[in-house]
Length: 299
Image (cartoon, rainbow, N blue to C red):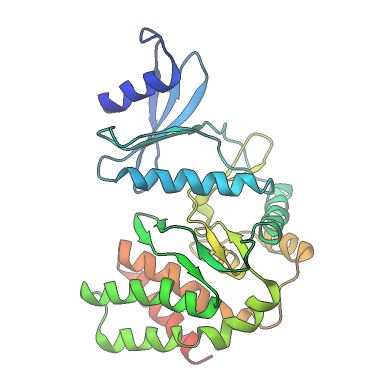
C-alpha cells in the first residue's frame, strides 16, 4: 500500500480536484525503495518512496536524471515531482516507461549514446567531481571538486568506503592496507588516460539493473550516481554484475575508441563499485573487492 501521506502529496501535485481517482499497483522498486505504478486522469507514472530515506535522497536522484537528460544524448525518465521537506515520507514521481524488449540494435544504440554522453557532458572548468555529495545505492557518495583525477579517485571514492568497511569489521587492517596500496597507484595508473580523454559526465552506477528498454527497444537509464569523471568508470562497471552484451562495447568503441592500457585500469575502476557492494551486501563482494585491489596494486 502507498502510505496515505504520499497519496495526499500526489493529489496535490497531480490534480487540484481531490475527488479525482488515483489507481495504483505495486511494482518492483529495486532492493532499496518501494515502487508503484500510478494511474490518474493526467496519465501513468512511476512512484518511488522510502520512509527511511531523507528528502535529499530523492532530490539528488532527480538532479542526476535531469543532468543526464540535459545532455540530449541518453534517455532518462522525466522527473514529474518529488517530496519536499514538509512531507513525512520522501517520494519521487517519474514518467512511466512502458516496458519493451532489448535487441541487437538496442544494445548498439546504448553504446553509441553512452559514448555521446561521455563526449559531451563535462565541467566547463575541466575539473573532476560534482557540485554536491550524492548517493550510490543507499550509501552517501562524497564529491566536491578536484583538479587531479587520480587524487579524486583515491580520496573521494576508494579510501572513504574502505575505512568504513574496516570500522564495521568487514575487512582487517591488513586488507585495508592492500586497498590503500591499490588506491595509491591511481595517479600512475589512471592519470595519463584521464588527461588524454578529459572529463566526462558519468552515470556513475551503470550496471544492467539500471538500464530499462522502452517499447521499440530504446534504452533508458535510471538510478544514476552522477559526477564528472573518467569515462572508463562507467565502462568498467558495465562489465560487473552480469555485464552487457558484446554489441554494446563494440558500438561504444566504434564511436569512441578506448585509450591504450584500458585493461590495466579495469581492476582499479571496478574496486569502488565492488567496495560499495561489499558494504551493502557483504559476502562474496568482499572477496571480489580484495581480488580487484590485489590486481590493481600489482599492476
